[in-house]
Length: 464
Image 1: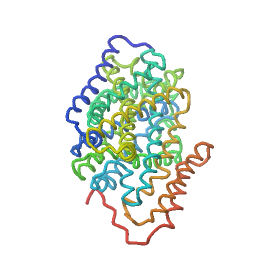
Image 2: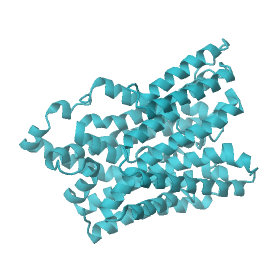
Image 3: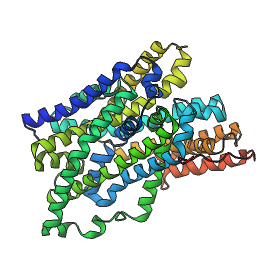
Image 4: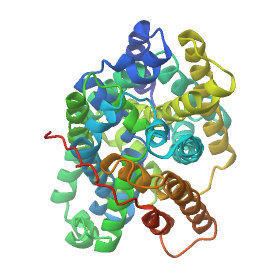
């Protein structure tokens, strides 16, 4: 694939505007709290931009088109499931989480289950999110290398630089501003491109013959069981991921946190549809093109230069933003819950510098791991990520939220350790049962005997 100088300029300009906006926003960041949770002053646009900017990454765009080129419209479930998860977050999780005035998931669990649970959560969640960052970095390196005709190692270095610029200076504020710019670029261009792909499909008899209504235009074309499994996996993954809840912690008040999650859902859900249309079009028109390259190829070949180039800039930003948002979540947890305590860092400026360099280390490690594992299955990294993030953390966190102090801390910690170990083993040995489900099952079995039979608190919703 080759691009013209004009396409290169427009792609670079789109990326520069997003990165420039984030760096400009970083001027007001003077402390670790300002870096990690925006000084707890974020409004709905910044919260929605931060969440959507991380959610809409390689999986929501390139990955959806890639899967749609293989199974059709049911690939849309990725962004549908993510959006539904964000709605549930807004209804039940956002307000009590924000009211706690914390910075990490681990700190929330410490309030209910003691310090040991917090350390375990930080390590396991960070590793799980790291695997997700690697899963985003794998296609990011491949696409940069293909679009700009770069060696893989140069593409990895370039992506490291872009991701670092995206979040190093302003943390959550930079990620939020970059996410807003990215989503504007993607919304304005992808829907035009997707509409063109859909029009071509519906007006070309040969394409209609290659894409029969079922399974290609059915949300259940890949099976009801697969759809429900993907939906539940996304629900668990989104609700216990630091990178998304960090935006909730940054809200100016609990109500704003809830509305921000709803707004992010409205932004995220539709994005998968045009990507799916483009993937289906490429399957019918160019089956020789690798599914991973379906979206970039269509944008740079079949769209007007302005639309295709801005859209391609938005796609690259989606990869950058996803890795950056995930790295920011890891950096915040490791700094707040582990490194600041180990090195006795308490002052705001020292902690800010520590967090920035931890994030740089995470970014470099994720891109290096992806570079060394080019050709590995993205699905493996995603499964491992979901098993680590959700298998041991989801149920203890949810019970702590809805039924505070209702479970003995010893049982809670045991459930985290045993369920995480089960999920990891199931992933490594290729269990026929989803590793996440095995982990959740073990977690519930170990937790239940530790129920204290005290009167549980009423769950708080967005309507309280």
